[in-house]
Image (cartoon, rainbow, N blue to C red; front, side):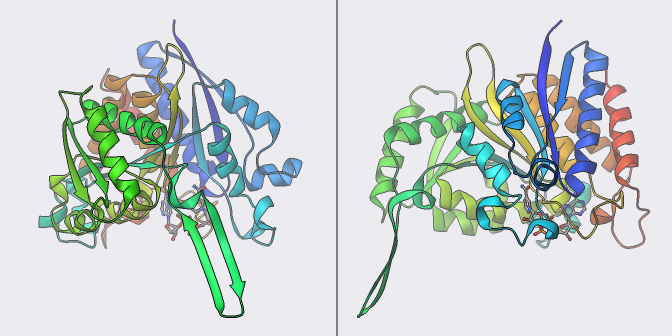
Length: 366
Ligand code: NAD
């Protein structure tokens, strides 16, 4: 029997509540398929600061390194906001991504038809939207050197540097093509090649990598055009790959197409280890939601869909991932809603009830 080792890092606030439901869904996949999951829980973020004084304890890093995949909740909250930047709860996540060299961030933005009215955009625009935005996470403007502010008697001068190497572009481009291959086989590379030399190299490398993926159709779109098209005709996109800054902005823009924060999963991937899928950290896009934490009302769907991504991208279990996603759709079709996605007057259920319904819907498909 195959056994997968999963590190479970719930973190703080509703991270603790929604991660439990994602684990229960994976357990139900295990129960029905015979797959073995070994879940090991670790401390991260504020919970780790309280227990051992640091947001990423060495024991947690060790656990994450040995795992095939990491299921992460969320970190942070007002209790730790007074701490200096370097010791804040959120540092735990940033340090973990850095230590594991997770360079590709995947954020699906899918509009579920029964929730289309929750989007601020018209149903006629968002209906049918199913996009995956892949953002390069470790290079570009946010990390490039030189950076800093020079103060002179004539005024100040501030510098950030956008820098990418062939290797950095190529590895994220390959993630883009691999993901597009598992979807509708269309990849859009987003750059600003009419102005930036970094984008000239980006386009050159992506075009070269495309030769290894003859079954995937590639097109190049300028970032300003992409930003417009995302809110004008989002259904024209399948998989998007782009550099760090553009991806930061476009993935947030794409998020509003899906309606609620409680519905958005994500993955951060590193290079594949020998004989296995990509190393990956899977987490809901939302934070710790201090306003609703501890009340049992958070929507667990983003965490559960993150577990589906874990099955798909780290464990190469596409059929099981499909089943989890279908289970979510089925429960939504039946009209079950947590508070964040309920229309006025609709009955509202809690985190655990939503988890129970999805677990049952997963099990009924085997
Ligand atoms: P947030 O995502 O926690 O909450 C924003 C709003 O969305 C809140 O009203 C919240 O109640 C609601 N919401 C979020 N997830 C929900 C869910 N699953 N179900 C129902 N409603 C949901 O963002 P914020 O308020 O800006 O941040 C709160 C804390 O979380 C901060 O400390 C921040 O630093 C941290 N944070 C952590 C991460 C992470 O760990 N990846 C990401 C974002 C924010």
